[in-house]
Length: 598
Image 1 (cartoon, rainbow, N blue to C red):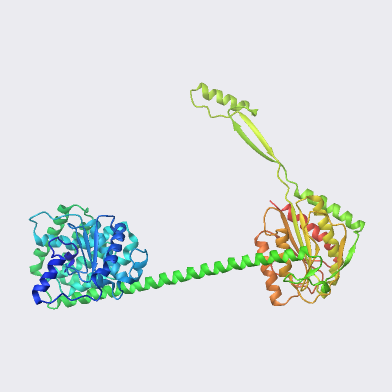
Image 2: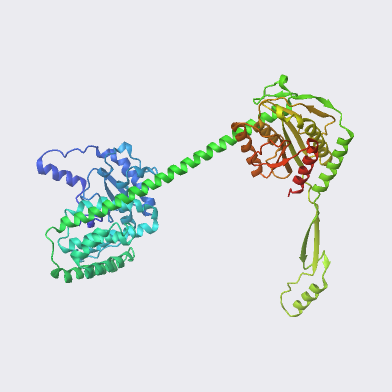
């Protein structure tokens, strides 16, 4: 194997020497690569910038050119402080298409980046130096064990680089199988160290390396393979600068092979067998990476779709709020009926006039005002605290206990003074919106709802200056019968039901925006007086608004007057056989709403 090529001594021929050697060889200028070497200078400089983060070393130089002096795809020269990188690993990309300085650009060339990460691992952790006079065979074995050791150490520092280290295994291991440096049994042992060693540090999965594990167990024998596994596992725990221990592990490696090799037959086609087994391993790893990439892409697409849906939902809600604000402004500021887009529609108004309230209505408004004040009343809260010093009421038992603690020489902890703080709780205001259907089937509700709207508005104004009520009559158009002001209405607005369509969704939007029914902090109630005999689109629009209000904590009450009425989903249904009981029902619901407010 040629694993030892990744850490080079400075004795390698320099560029000028190599050019002169080629000139002396055939008398012709050296062949120009497809991309001129000077175009790769920028790529090498940017790789050097990224190498600082990968290796933690700011003192290294990266040279990137087509071909390398060492012949390996990449190499680290410890004495020169240089990492050499073969630009052909980026194929088919050209230099102007490669920008390593941009984080994330490496996803376009994972194989090349995997090799670079491998060399960064060498730069960070291959810092031990073999002493002069060391056995070259032992040093070669130590460098072989170093391959998986440095990747394991790098994975501890940067676990997210595992994907790239897996691709580097496919790039670095496979090309050297057919041209091994080691021969015979040592070749099989080297394959085991490079493949199974990466398995044991977590680069490759056990299931992916089964083909190499089975073949090496058959060629080397289970005992020798277990011995070699113990050696490379011990080498994985070796410190970066501990040359003595690394060479000791390498010596044990050579001794184990020397002892077992004479008794092990070498298959004639060992290289082909190893190449096939390693190919199976790399194919399985590639399939796993492709599946992981597909799963990650699917998860990314799902997150993007979810984010897009959330953005669309936010935009839709914002648009709905703007439309509701415009609808509320047009309804409550106009003096007549408006269409859904806010334009006046005076000829279709259901309002028939105004009248003075009756004595019964005035009495009902007074009773409702008293009931609302009683429901809104909150007891004062009390907060009791103790202290070792005044002010406060003296507790004699605690005072004696404190005296006893002091006499016993201990730190006194008893607190004999009790202070009570009483705070008034604010009374919550009331928000009541009434939406009354004025289609032809609701004519019986007109008089009692007109009376109820005046009673509720009058009582709310008398109860709390912050309380607001509003009433909207709706068919296809919208008409404000009472408006959200702090002044009590003087007259009762009467109306008739002659419409033929329904626009409850816009009516709820106008009431919600005008009364802030979706905002906590007040007793909130929406009353819908309707038989709910709508088409599918009208029902869906209304149900969506009702769900939003109930989710926000607003009570929604539907009053019906006939047995043929339908229940609007999400509302609390209350059937009133007598239309005249509508004011009392609305008053009771408003009282309950403010009583439940916390």
